[in-house]
Length: 259
Ligand code: BT5
Image (cartoon, rainbow, N blue to C red):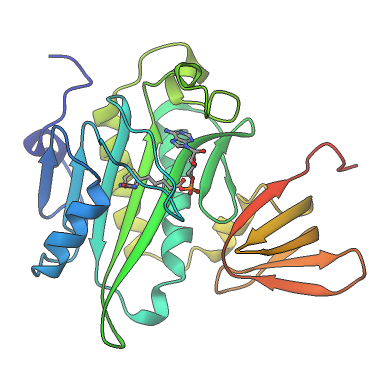
């Protein structure tokens, strides 16, 4: 059997988790695992339900951007039903779980680019999309969607060729997508149920200390990424000395002018 092969049974096998992956929906092909997760969450899926696909035809990023997700890109979404006060922890948990998974399955070091990317050598190996479902003012569910480039050649896609990488590109060999999926589910479970991840997350941020341009809607903030707050937001020290707090958006890191 090829080690690119996935199934709900295989993913479930030997899974040692308390919450995540108790229910698994495996789809050989789907539009977007986040979209399927949203539908089943609305229909009452239990916390920890996992949607995993071998291939997405309409994988999505933030702000209506698309996520390339052919076979070889691990695509999974987890339905959680946390307290509203824990929502800001989810991006920390997800990105740290990916960093741990990459290290444990391949030995590769990766870092987190605020707010939602995981990079190897400055190139994007993983994107994370968290979408929340509300019933009025009450949080119904949160969906953590994670895409990891496992066996994937970004050079085949001109729009990301310069800025993306994959585990197979870094190692020069095939990587078991099942092993990565297993580890990721275990890591998500233990970080979700475990102790506060803030300090570990902060230590893995590549963004801090560098000059950045942050774009949120039409607002652009330039300065040094100085610190992060407990709620996951980023503080940028502008060149005029003002400290600006950013809660969302895209950050361009200027590594060259960092001395
Ligand atoms: C993200 O958005 O990075 C979030 C991606 C989340 C994907 C997962 S897969 C499972 C789940 N189901 C979904 O439908 N989505 C989630 P953003 O920060 O907006 O970045 C999107 C940008 O990343 C695109 O505009 C491209 O420039 C780039 N990109 C697209 N596909 C990529 C890939 N496979 N590897 C690296 N970069 C990619």
